[in-house]
Amino acid sequence: MIIDIDQQKVEELGLNADALKFGQTVVKIDSKYFRPTEVDLLIGDATKAKEKLGWVPKYDLQALVSDMMQSDLHLVKKDDYLKRGGFKTLNYFE
Amino acid sequence: MKVALITGITGQDGAYLAEFLLKKGYEVHGVKRRSSLFNTDRIDHLYHDPHEPNVKLKLHYGDLTDSTNLIRLVQETQPDEIYNLAAQSHVKVSFDTPEYTANADGIGTLRILEAVRLLGLEKKTRIYQASTSELYGLVQAVPQSETTPFYPRSPYAVAKLYGYWIIVNYREAYNMFACNGILFNHESPVRGETFVTRKITRAASKIAMGLQDCLYVGNLSAQRDWGHAKDYIEAMWLMLQHHTPEDFVIATGVTTTVREFIKLALTNLVLRLSLAEKMKTNAV
Image: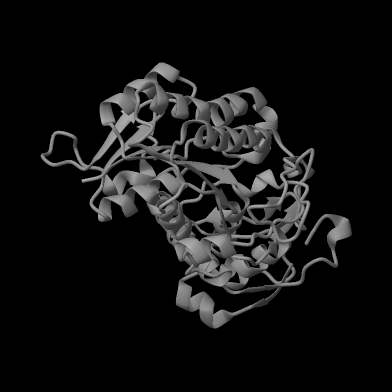
């Protein structure tokens, strides 16, 4: 549920301020997405790769999410622009 | 100039790896399945008209379920390195298509190994196999490393278990340079739209733009070790440059719930959420 909206960021990012409402439920659970046998917890130990290959990740989760959000916001704005121009955009719901 | 053959080049990892190898000066051959759609969105920026001179990225039609096709592709391209990234890679979908998943993800790996062996390229061609953290499934230890026993929990993971062990077996039986990269979840802006992270970031963007009201998800409490695909494809390459063929875990060492990922995605924009207290009513 939305409990706060950062108005400054709404303007900065060019979002649709009218569409965002306090108290709006934005996430719901649909059991059709549950797996018959679930994998609850994965956490890897990449010590060997670090020691033998010199590999360490450059992105942390925050940087990953930012990269994905920036890209998706851009794509959604493109869809919005096309829609307003009278063009059809794809749904991709599953 | 080194030659690489990438199966699954139209996927997230294939696209990043192709770009990475082209920058390193490789000639890159990619295998894609025939479809009436192009399905080359992710490599479009790398792809040139094959009629142009000195084209370094070439695409071939193929399928991991087609042995003779794979033998011919390996024979024609004579690769120094094969990256076997092609698979039916969606865990939930594997419950709907278990036989195909076993064929492509399990026996497909064997077909690559056999193609190299039949053509007498065991000494020349190094093979990277896309193994997965899903092999750990019902985890037997926390955190998971190269020595943690596997306990697969989906047709996808069981198929990948065969792929893992047939790579190990061919390495030991025929001295082939074949490695498993046991990669934990890795995401990016080009992650498939039906995988949970991308589904979340797309929905968060749509919600913020007023184009969607609500995001529907499954298990919010699942915890995953999420890294960036760009980092992980570099590890694939490093494994094949190593002096001996070995298996490696690639992960960040940090685990996060799906619930927390959703919070991060939405707060990355403008929203603060109150989570969990309304779980009983199915709303978050």
